Length: 610
Image (cartoon, rainbow, N blue to C red; front, side):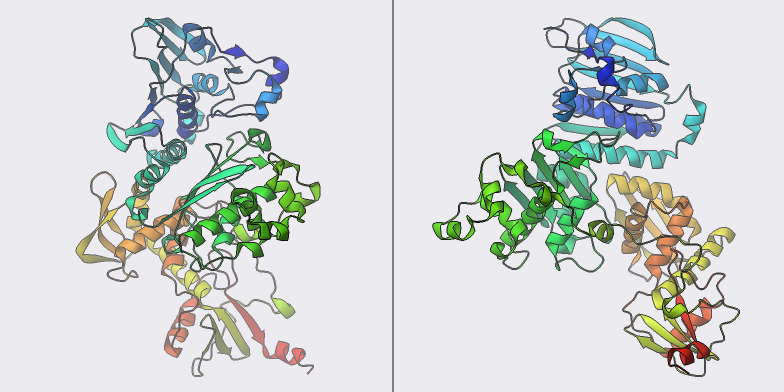
């Protein structure tokens, strides 16, 4: 067998982005796992020590490398997958940049053992700081065993920049899940500090989904499958009752590559229409297969953000496939597919038309485009416009603002010094959301949830600073079983949670015992409180540059606050506002939203022309 790895010509290398930069252990894990997948391995083992800081080892039983290929794989721009620039736009494999191993060898001590089936002996390589220290024959099984030790040993500043072991482990588990979900036909295992975290036998996509995300989804998954000439969609969406309060467990794969796409997420959410509970997010794992020439995966170095040749077509197919699946499994009311042009695209391709229906739709230009084999990509340019305002739908509206914009009519916010509540008069509640409170010189309209979030935020902040948060002991300790990634996160949060009044102890691999909770948490609600806190923390807006502790306090305040839609008595409203006026910043919620608007007598008179 001839050697297959060659050096890219300079002109092609210059057209490729700089390559993967190893920013943290998870970056190296991603590259090594993808290389093992590309080697046609049936079994891949990931072993870690200290969350990858001291050891990342990937063992596969793939096809291995020759001695020359093993040495060449650590050169910059070395690749077995690209011969010319056109190949960049027909990528079928995973790790292809030809930079990862060179980058790893530059910042870690690497040992590689590899052997092909036809070779009697394998090859041993030891490299650190990009210098080959040893190269010799060795006895080893077929496949590749690569270990990288002491990450950033020669760049102390970078090593000091790494987060805690628990934080780095969460990132590694995320990357592991992305690869394991994409290739359920491969056995995967993950061992951390000699403790097995995952043992995933090869199986179907559904089996892998349940292995990774939990058997609680076993009866809650709806299969999605649409086969068309343009693309194929398969996978699962969870039924509406399994939706989460945060954007967790949402996975898109394009040609087996995990991607992030707010645009396609909007397609899924819109397909559920009114089926989702308020403020809930669907759970899904969807696999899209289409011609690689229709996808540009070189948009971002991590290749998690991609660009479709025609996003609107993909959006329509995804939305139609989800609607079809929900209707087929009686999750949604029966849907008339002839009423929606987007859905009709999929039906026109994947289902035979009766003569009567053909006569109804054959005049459609859209039908002709999609019903002719291999013509879907010839959609007219004018049809490629993006849906308006889709990004606004997806993006969190939570933003931090140093000042609140003046409300309508130019009414100004007030401060706690000028708020003189008239407590001997009744307060009123509007739409179970707003409190109308009389002042000596006008009145306030207060958003009850924003007000309570501000009160709780300052209370928790003071308690955590003074280490005086009240804890109520549980009469019967509550056991909490979590997924590996959530268990790693909770382990990381335990010190700060204790300062907030939680008493939680590790119990086994991914289990915990809740001995006590803050005084605000209702008895019997302990487990849900911790689970929701983890979900909120995981998906806290990345645009807000808060510390871990600040994020945790924000999540606690949001979770325990009085919600919009909750009825309040006059006594409760007065107590809430009495606490609000004692806050340091009463006019702004912790997330920067206005808490109240003041209307003065003078402003009211001007409004009515007086």
